[in-house]
Amino acid sequence: EAGVAQSPRYKIIEKRQSVAFWCNPISGHATLYWYQQILGQGPKLLIQFQNNGVVDDSQLPKDRFSAERLKGVDSTLKIQPAKLEDSAVYLCASSRGAGRYGYTFGSGTRLTVV
Amino acid sequence: DQQVKQNSPSLSVQEGRISILNCDYTNSMFDYFLWYKKYPAEGPTFLISISSIKDKNEDGRFTVFLNKSAKHLSLHIVPSQPGDSAVYFCAASPSGNTPLVFGKGTRLSVIA
Image (cartoon, each protein chain N blue to C red):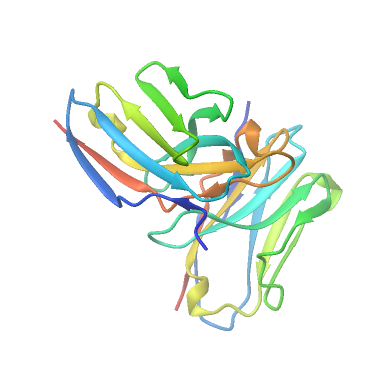
């Protein structure tokens, strides 16, 4: 089966600019996650979707981050305006169900804010 | 508030020997544990998992041990190979539709 697709792979922006990331999960996977991985740390959940509904966005900095999953398939994550501390790898993952099924991760988007 | 802890940032092992990666957790609600492996510029890939009803799960060279009373799990790789060099993340989930919580990772280097 095709994996989780993410684009772009790399992005460099200046602080206060906006940026968007795209994710296409594995076909049939109802659950989609966005994680942020800062260098030297483990992935940290930003938002979880079940089909096109938000299940958990408690750790999403909603003043600057937004995410949507239209039609329950593709998803976009946006940052506006970006801060230096947003420099990280943004990982998209999908799964058939909840955590016990394990996730399939995409390769991630490495964001550098200068 | 780090619920999943990997206290060793790095580990170096000779090829052919055993690699032991450790993970501790604080949330007693966690009942399913997974290990992921990550190569540079790639996303983490699932390696092995264990349910809290078991204390051991084996898959080829990889074995995960769970000690619920100590809230501790470990991943054993025997024998270690240079291709095992990667960052290993421990992750945990409580029952229900709750996302995985990850540790900070341990970088394993297997030296030929």
